[in-house]
Image (cartoon, rainbow, N blue to C red):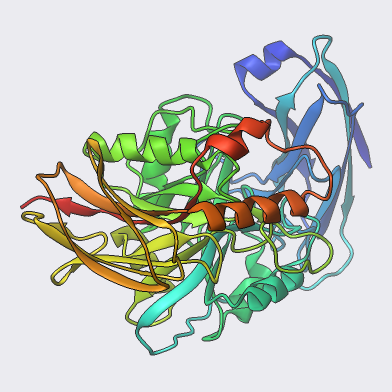
Length: 468
């Protein structure tokens, strides 16, 4: 057993938010146990992780062995098993590092103690789970949630509980994006099936911005310290054939890095009332500036330690709906990148479809004189069309199976559609939201005026662009 005590300061945090405590691991070690101890407080929050000797510094391709952020104060890594969030397997001899994330450091600094125990008892070398490739060979609209968490990062609930919640919600695909780790795949790789496809994902999580990466087997280095590191992130993801999505660019964790070449933006996270009008405004500004980014949504649901009933603050609120030639991970990723779909309030939320002839959402038209829009389940709501300059058209949806060919004035750069709650839908949605709070104060620094004044979107469609 080795005990290391150090003092971390705000100067350390300013120099690098990641603080390393090296320790030596001899040959034949089969298990490492680490315990972190410090005086936790509102102004003292220290994250926890580990790297093995293959770490070459940011951005490394190898050497990551786990991350639990502030959710755990201890972990183990063995050849046959590991704490959720940490990677089991071969234990390389040499210098390892406990990595501390200096998220909150008090003015006086903090004393930190790390206790390390090494063991060389005989253990098997267990392989990592193999990825599976299930397919449902039917074209159609498929529903999923692209952002949720298990106890492999900072949620209380197991992958099994999240799986049950996804089945309860009637989802077809699910991306489990635990913070800065990929170990949730121990469960989800073998459990992916034609009934429920699991999409590989990880949430790159820092103090000044979060992003999801999709469709990659490899872990991605999250240790960003400079505004320009967003471009390092985009390179790491795209070199591996993955997709990059900017998450919840709004209070309380906006994207404060330079804006990278992103494939998607999470324009809707959790209930619409969770400041999503700001995410949408920033998305609109980027489209108007000429960027082509697909709009997606995700609940950011942190699975509790029990299965919750359906409601406005659980998994798949909102739901991303994609048109796929088949249900498979490859098809989901291709549709996300292309923008062939929309985001709706829940698995049973309004359907929203827009096309120009054979050109569907995410596509490009030479000119836009008229669009065809289909909306289902939205009687009494408003359909609005928006281009780079703002509002183009507003129509009342007068039935639950509504379609219209809508002539357009000259439009700029793109056209996209939204369904905005009418009086009846709005009253119901606010009542459901406040009931789900069970008497608690409004979260996320919301004010009562926000519930009164903010338009509530029920569905958001991807743009059709104008171009050659």
